Length: 282
Image 1: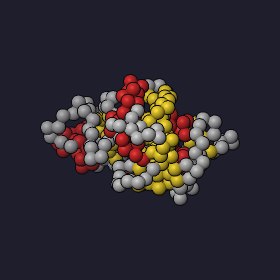
Image 2 (image 1 turned 120 degrees about the horizontal axis):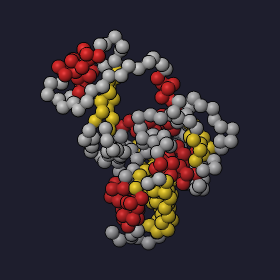
Image 3 (image 1 turned 90 degrees about the horizontal axis):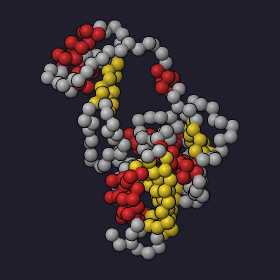
């Protein structure tokens, strides 16, 4: 209600953010999760009077529950530049770098992904993405086929291609993620190696490596499906998992995988395993 009201009274832009600690990282297909408390921010020209704005907002949203209202004057500046200044080149392992597109590439950078933070999830700054990138950098991917399940910005799919994978599939159910992944793959000259697609039949397809940086609950549900998509002796790398959830995720995959290893950064873990030759039993 307040979002529409802000637009009605002349907001140039409106953004919504979680007011508490209720992150929404990777909704399931058909799900529309909501934050219990939301901070809504409207940006206005400085010609508007504060008292008039608040009065107009209340009139446009009668009966709506607003816990607090605050008006802040912002000094004029290059907001695009200010936003981008927070992002610097980041190194993962010995060879791999993620570099914002308007930054100079470090001289010692061997493998480079040029990527700007955008609407889709994944810029390398989150611990789960870092764990995946560092694991990928440590692997020999030359000639491999890779599935990036829940590709977000495409950063992991692009990293796999840059690191030598022959063919990479990025899969996501978010239309914005598909747009972002395709654009980022093209900007990094790996569009021919990286196929980006939405949900659909995958019967008969198998990969040497499966990456999934989503959430523990979804990973547990996908265990059988990933066992069918992973070639015998192929690898899985699962992230988006709190360290307290690691054993539950491993238990879900043990019927089909072995050789489990765990990497941890802060409270997050990455679980890797190898597809067994024998057929598992659920």
